[in-house]
Amino acid sequence: MKLPVYFDNHATTPVDPQVVDAMLPFFTERFGNSASKHAFGWEADAAVHEARKNVGSLIGAAPREIVFTSGATESDNLAIKGVAELYRDRGDHIVTCAAEHKAVLDCCKFLERHGYRVTYLPVDSHGTVDLDKLRAAIDEKTLLISIMAANNEVGTVQPLEEIGRIAEEHGILFHTDATQAVGKMPIDVAACRIHLLSMTAHKLHGPKGIGALYVSARKPAVRLNPTIHGGGHEGGIRSGTLNVPGIVGFGKACAIAREQMAMELPHITRLRDRLEAGLFSHLDELHLNGHPTERLCGNLNVAFGYVEGESLIMGLNDVAVSSGSTCTSAALEPSHVLKAMGIREDLAHGSIRFGLGRFNTEEEVDYVVRRVEEEVTRLRGLSPLYAKRVATGTPAAASSGK
Figure 1 (cartoon, rainbow, N blue to C red):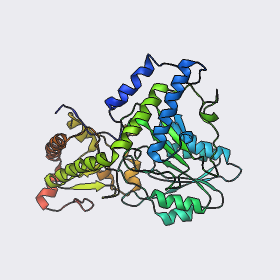
Figure 2: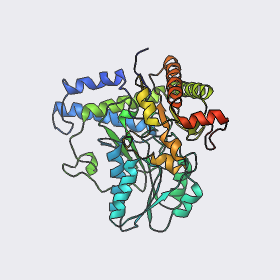
Figure 3: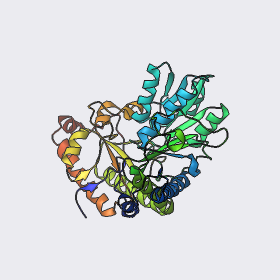
Figure 4: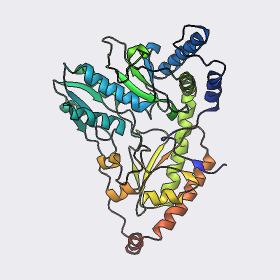
C-alpha cells in the first residue's frame, strides 16, 4: 500500500491509465484543430464526434445534445444564465435548493442582482428536497428548476424522476448539476425528463479542464443564450477552439464508466460501508451527515463530536480527505450544506468528507480507520469538554451513531 492514501475522490479523481493512453496521440501525432478543413482537422473532428457519442451514451443522450465546456462550473453558468436570458420574456423566476454547489448558487445570486427572482428551497436533515415545497414554489413566471442530482458534500441523491415530472406538469425547464453523479450512478435524461445536465470529466477518472452540458433536442428543443462569444463553435452555444485531447479523454472515461458501472458501484459501496462500520464501531460521538441509504456509493460524511475538522485533517497527514466542498473548504464558516441540513454548528465544524473511488482498496480502508481512530482519540484527549463528557457519562444530545 502506498502512502498517502487518497480518499478525496469527490474533489477529483486520478486519471485512468486507459484515458491517458487514449489522449496522448492527440498532443503530438493527431494534433489538428477540429474546425480545420483538411486531414488533420477531419481526424480531430472524428475523434470529437466519437467522444460525443460516448459522453451522451452514459446519460442516454444523443451526440448532438452534448456541448463541450471547460468544466461543470461553466456548464452550470451556461445552463442557468442561458435559459434566464433567452426566455426572459416568458418569466423571471428560478427555483433551486439551498444545498446546491456554489456554481449554481452564485449564478442565481448574480441573476437576482439583475432583476430575477430566485426561490431557495430548504432541505431536510438528510439533505433531501421536499417535493411539496417545490410544487408550492412554482408560479406562472417560473422558467427553470435547478436541483443537483447528488450532493457533493454529503452524497444525498435527489429524486430526479419526481422533480422531472413536476417540471413537465408545469411546462418548466429542468436543469440538474450532475457533476458528482455521472459515472457513479445510472442517469437517464429521458426517463428523468431532464432538459439540461452539467457534468465534468475529472470526477470520473478523466482529465481536468473539460466538461459538458447536455442540452435536450427533444421537442420542444431547449435553446440558450451563449455566455462565451466568438467563432460559433458547438452549434453557436459555446465558442472557443475545442480541447480535443481533453474531449477524447472525457469520452474514454465515460465509455469505461458505462462498461464497468455494474461491477464498480457495488465494489465501491462495500468499501464505503466497511469504512463506515469501522469508524462507528471504534469511536463514539459520531454523526452521519447525509441520507443513510440514498447517497453516492463512495460518499461518507461524518461529524466527529469534540473534534475540529481542520485539526483532524492536519493530523491525518498521510490520508487525503476534506472538510467539505473543495471549492469552499478554505472558508472558516461551516459548510452551507450542513447548515442548510440543520446540523449543529460544532458538529458541522467537526465534519469530514471521505470520498472513495475506483482505485481504493480494503487495505487502505482498514488503514484509514486505524489512523482516524488514533487521531480522534489524541485530539479528544486534549479536549476538556470531552473529558467532562466521559466523566459524566452523558453523550452529546445532537450526536448519533449507527
